[in-house]
Length: 500
Ligand SMILES: Cc1cc2nc3c(=O)[nH]c(=O)nc-3n(C[C@H](O)[C@H](O)[C@H](O)COP(=O)(O)OP(=O)(O)OC[C@H]3O[C@@H](n4cnc5c(N)ncnc54)[C@H](O)[C@@H]3O)c2cc1C
Image 1: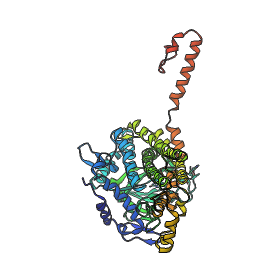
Image 2 (image 1 turned 90 degrees about the vertical axis):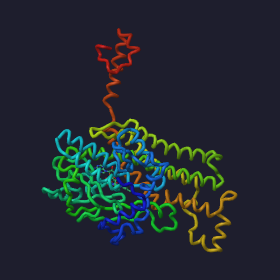
Image 3 (image 1 turned 90 degrees about the horizontal axis):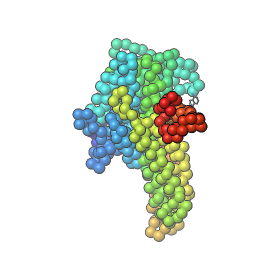
Image 4 (image 1 turned 135 degrees about the vertical axis):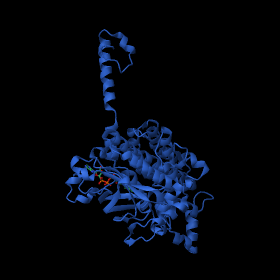
């Protein structure tokens, strides 16, 4: 098994020749494309952290034979693994904003569960295909994107009802060697600088949608696969201290009759399992999103605390700033705690891997989706208007205006205008720039819209046991009124009426 470092990952991209366009220009070498550099840097961090002694416990997972692999490529085999994946995601995103690679972890975990379920119930052989693919990913320490979201066209219509049949990925041909797929996936994180993409259905299909019931893996440079990508972060923007270094590209990924060999097809035609697969992915992924956004929260808390000190209104002395800071911590640690609970209350699947508790992972993602806007508001309140009004680097560089800026925009004694402006820019970059807007929308929609979380929460919640408990209680109370005084101490939900 290979454990690449960051540089080796960057170099590994040279073996791939995907068909990509960014800002109207064809990309000739992904590894050298400046518009993808912040995204490539972010993924490289996931490789580098795995080599750091102090992070190995959370960044590396152990296979049954004792081999160590990057946790982003591993299935979870215990609740502790689920917890460590959450912590690893937080660590990665505290450095990078979004390390992107955890989507692969989430797709592999979901596929293990559902392929094993299909094999057990339908006598198929999908789990062994998945295991073969997992070996391939782990052996080469690959990074794969998760391509789940179809363009969907008219949201009120199912795939087969769409006027344009290509708005969901579908199988257009099957032969002895494999399948041919057509369609597209939208909003795909990091797609240009992935090695492969893992394609999953985005929703539950019905029998009429059988051609759209498909899941597979594909190299990013497979013939017929094309990407129209956006730049990652704010490359080469001198006013963007963070996102000129770290960011994420997204792409519209088009499958123009792409051939997929059977040893990379995980589901084909089993429409009854598409909803389960989409839900299983969402469950893993929403727990990962919790870790990711906690990492972003960590950065914003650190920067806001420093800004309050630079301003001479420090969070540990000024009461309303302390309250605001406490609120930032409450929000970040509050949703992170649901990720911990999702791990602690996780359970084992028929495949032997562990999955997070779905109610907890959905609630945490739902909380952060809405509270990201509060995080930004509070950071702005603490920091002041300079977050968006700091003079430009060009004006600071000119001797005369630079002197004036230094004279007027310094903070408390000892804090220069430059230090204050650097911090303001960092906060603007994360919360009030184009990239700040990106972080809001990825928090809100990445991993599913809030309504998807509400629906999953309700779908996975055990209403029956809560209802039974109340009915049992009422029966007991009725008896207490009558003859059965013993029931005062009866706390056993399981007792039948006769036993009670
Ligand atoms: C930055 C970013 C990165 C992303 N990365 C990835 C990725 O790597 N891989 C991936 O697969 N996806 C990715 N996504 C996609 C993400 O999962 C979707 O954005 C999300 O599922 C919402 O889908 P949508 O964007 O198509 O919005 P829509 O589905 O258009 O939702 C818009 C609104 O319409 C509502 N709505 C939608 N359909 C219906 C309906 N039938 N009936 C009633 N209401 C409806 C929704 O609840 C929502 O309120 C990413 C998204 C973002 C923003």
